[in-house]
Length: 76
Image (cartoon, rainbow, N blue to C red):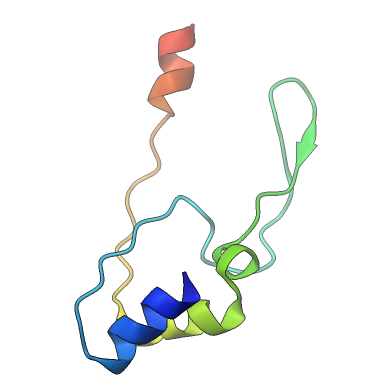
């Protein structure tokens, strides 16, 4: 992932990246309906601080409104 981001940044190429990971570091742990505590990894934890920094340097963040997961909704 880092090499793709670095290449596209260095060659001034377009990059569209989507993620459902938290872009902010240190997001709190949340609890599932079953009572299990879960720590969601942040974007920086998954792709590394350097790649995250490059993404923020070259991209514009567009936040989508939070909606319920359709898979969970369909399973009910």
